[in-house]
Image 1: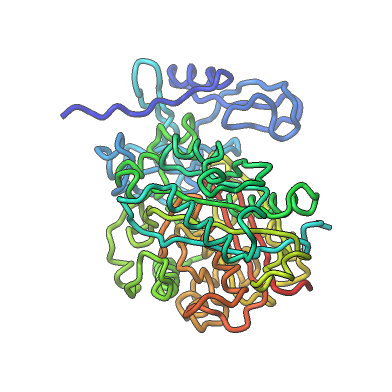
Image 2: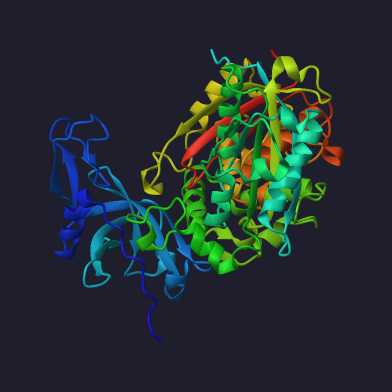
Length: 137
Length: 394
């Protein structure tokens, strides 16, 4: 059976560096050079102090599961073959939150506040998605 | 202080049943509701000078017809100066109410007609509905590629709320049971058979811990209201339903950016709306709290200050929110009992609040209801809108 074509991210131009880095297996986020706050998802200006003096910084890739769900039924068409799959909001060490999937483990072993680390899954020739997997002991 | 407070009133309401009506065009839901609302208000059709249709999701072309004046022409409304859409998804009713009130108080309109109609039950397939709602208000860059959709959106909030409060699955099931008890009494509701906790808890798992019977279903339907000045309202047949307090807070677009998925913006919006009204939760006779999924109804009720955090679940279980209970809640049956009709979910709640206050709620009538709170939220709960209505001005 052929795999469903997954929706690719519809990329805003100012977020392109994020997706380019993901293709190289790196997780980068913005940091405001004026107020020092980290920002995700990428913005055109700082959401804290409105400065446009933003820079990209390398992320540790480590974080914890803020919340999660195991999708067992009624998924969007392109994802029904993946069920059961885990959608989670991950809070990174840098303080920002990101929606992603938890992979590489029993979906039913995921818990709130569980430590996770980034892993990269190639979506197609153009895009790689940052996903998360439980952090080893 | 808001100039809308106590100076405008809902004077007429109209609503068609929520259900599956494959042989009817969506326009008929709009026109029937609008005619009912105008007739109910006691005004003449040509007294309407402003029409605010809200958005329909099932069809772009149908929505464009609403935007470009079809309702005005179909009903032969001769004195309409403005026909313009007010749309914020599920919170459209609250936003339209406030905008209509502002237009009247500013002297820019005298009698405003608000109309909603959609056909999500028979105008799209079941999978089409899931797919439609997996992109509507869900970020195409940061969420869609990960398989996010509305069941998972609700499940993510439920998981964290359970983790932080110790609330159990049966508490969420109890919300569905409470809403169903009201739906059983509502001739316009789709689900009219009794529902038990056990039935909810044994229904199919969708996205853990959310089960099928904790998920709304999409239907066809429509509703409308007429608003005018408080002064004119006192000369019309219905008991005027005054806007007493209104506030809101927009807290996110991308779901992961919501600062607190167990609270959202309800506490602040509620505090401001109650303050404006000069009332407290203990003054409220009927609470029309937006559901769509049990988690939102439960946490909104707590955040508005009706009880302590983590206590609402027991109130639903005990029957405090049921017909005859201490604080009758979501008395039209909500989207879980009456059915989800897009932006109309909260239109229905707003109409029900007005109906209760007018004393026209039939078997569901809360005795001597004077003050009501209504809440609404759109998209992935991107905003928290709180409205306080009453038949007296405190």
